[in-house]
Figure 1: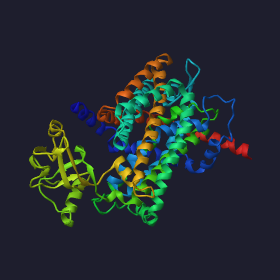
Figure 2: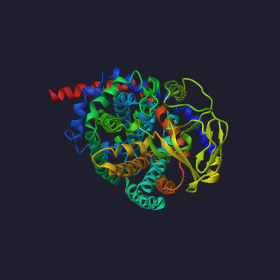
Figure 3: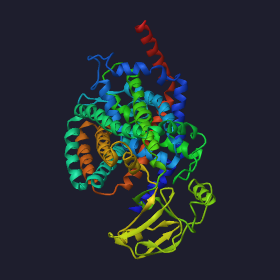
Figure 4: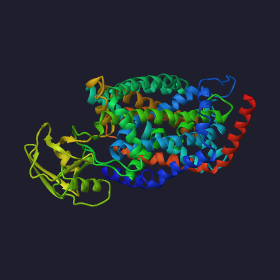
Amino acid sequence: MEKINHFLSVIDSYIGGSSWFIYLLLGTGLFFTIYLRFPQIRFFRRAIRILSGKYDHQDHEGDTSHFQALATALSGTIGTGNIAGVALAIHLGGAGALFWMLISAFLGMTTKMVEVTLSHKYREKDSKGNIAGGPMYYMKNRLKMRWLAAIFAFATVLSSFGTGSLPQINSISNAMYSSFNINHILTGGILTVLLGFIIIGGLKRIVKVSEKIVPAMAIVYFIGAISVIVYNYENIIPSIAQIFTTAFTGSAATGGFLGAGFAWAFNRGVNRGLFSNEAGQGSAPIAHAAARTNEPISEGLVATLEPFIDTIIVCFITGLVLLTSGVWKEKVHNDFQNTDIFVLAQEYDESSPADKQAVADFIQGKNTIGLYNGNLNVKNGKIIDAPTIIHAHSFAEEITITANGIPYNGFLSIKEGQIENKSIMDNQIKISGKSLIHSAPLSSEAFKRGFLGDMGQYIIPICLLLFAFSTAVAWSYYGDRAVTYLWGSKYVWIYHIIYVIGFFIASFVDTTIIWTLSGITVALMTIPNLLGILMLHKEMKSTLKKYEEKIITKDS
């Protein structure tokens, strides 16, 4: 399994994890923003009016209202990325990473408008009379590139598992177990029955759940977030200033944080921002295509609100929680993840500016320093003559090693600075200590620094439950539409059964390989979609121009 995961990781490094892919995403958003004269600004107020139902017509073709379509799309994008993704971006890139998340969202608003407009324009009805839409339909009907549409649709089916089903329930069950000690299988069983009930009911039941669960999870999250920000009110202005002042210079070392240059702030911010709101991936257009309107542009305008809500509001609030609480630069006691550990060949002193800078430069790829090879001698849970150990990009302290809950005695095999998995698995070893943390655990720690105190940490697992489950529901619909395109609606029930079974199994098994596969399938969805909308840039401009002329005539 490790060899398969390594193989997939190598593939992902050349596709989704590569710099050219990030520049393609960002560049497409920048091109359309300039080419269409900043539609996310010019039509922002109108998008809100459309969403409110001001221009709704019940006789227009479609299965959902504008709000229901947006809620379904948001339920697919607002998820672990808003909790764990922001925390990871700031952990790696510093406060400046949040600035680049906001920029990517601003540009992504236009990308989202374009892909939704074109997908809505070329939607169809399936054999059951339901609306079927998404990028595969403009690829087939307008570009006449059925092979490209097939690649996109098949990648969507894979992504429905790799993004929407397996990792989501795995995150939920782990959070429920660690916070409330609820058995993984019990969590999986209850939510599987609920998921099956929802998706078998089809789109109408999905949108009814989405339009209720999205506002509910937003309220719960904002109450907790605002309690932390207000509690640390004296840090609000300095934190906001830090976001902008370090965006182009990088963040200096502070506390346990070893600093981050501009490249890290930019890459981590753009990467997490784009993957949080899914602008350009082509998933949300599948939900928006079902909206009840005869004006594709109007639904495209509603879609611009998606990155705005998902990233500019929710991710920004999460970032302020992390920055005002100060926890992003503080070391806390935690259980170490083996993939986050590096053992250096010699001992470095964190109190020495020169040593600290050398390690920081190594982490950022600016220099090379020796990595440990050999065996570490452990007695009574302590490493004898320990070299410097780095965990989560920080100097690890107070390290203890246990095997099945008791202090470990023996050796740890180290190769090129990393503990070999065999050393961990054979002895059921757990390594603990003080270091920086990232992702969801960092967000949980930050939520403890508000008026709610330690009770605040429970907001994260509750929100993760709502966020991740709603993502699984939304992606079941995306996969449903992709299966309909590839093989017809008569096979959708088979897909639903496999989706639900996979959802249950993933609640109690490791899904590391699924996350890796997810990165690849996201890229396989995004690349055809971006190429397609770029090829149709002239049509998009003329469609928008006709819409402008029409609304000017109506409003005058």
